[in-house]
Image (cartoon, rainbow, N blue to C red; front, top):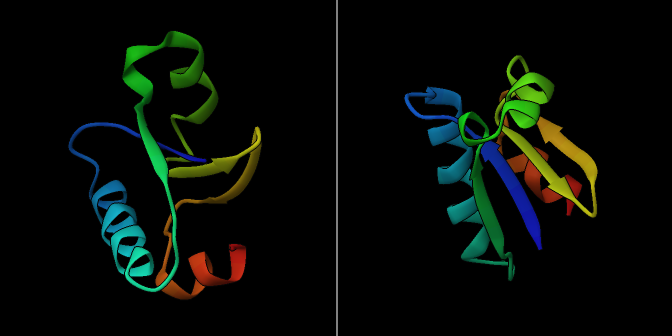
Amino acid sequence: MFVLYTRPNCPLCEEAKLMIELVKEDFPLEYQEVNIESDDDLHEKYMLMIPVLEKNNEILLYGNIGYADLLEAL
């Protein structure tokens, strides 16, 4: 299970979600979206990096997440 850390009104976050949906058409990919503004520790940790895609507490991708980046990370 992947975790996508986002925040409201974040264009890069919306783009990352769109790229994940495109990848999901070809590969099984389950993810949970977490709003970093709901947790002070997460906000402090990721506020300059979002969106952040993580699996097993390891950051796979962050910032401008593209389709090719996602495929490579998988």
